[in-house]
Image (cartoon, rainbow, N blue to C red; front, side, top):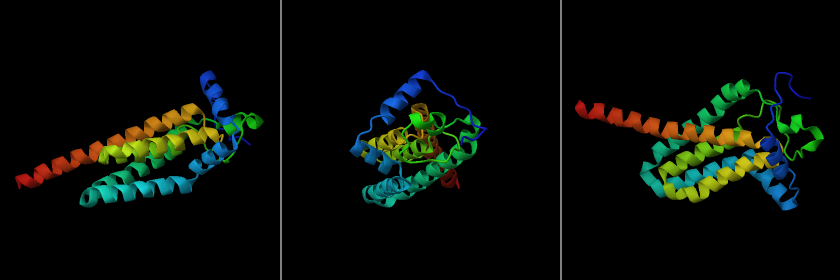
Length: 192
């Protein structure tokens, strides 16, 4: 049953792309989509990036790890508490009924932005800014997580694009914001 406060907003290109991805119905790909959509996959990927940065950056890893935690928290927290209620968009799994293949059910709490996509790109952005070469892994993993949400039937492609934009902006804001604050703090400390 759909939440009466959510609105069924559809765009022609969005619905067509949803059906193209969600309707693939390829056994191994469905399994990849379900796995990539799981919280366990997201947690394992994040821990893998934490380990990678820890090995690569050694003593300089503390700031990127702090940035990663802040970016994830802001992306998820503000996305869930502000953006999803503001957009109040019905998930395709509820809007389309039997026309959507739902491989991984999700509560009908709104679909825009995809917080899986947002959080994945917030993490990937911080990781890439901390160690750019990690982008060859971090960005494809984030993209896989994002696309998997359409594949399992719980997000429109535009939800995923909004999540990508939101997470990237949060990641950039946290990294450059904390760098700016540290520069100011160091400047003040050196004047004393």
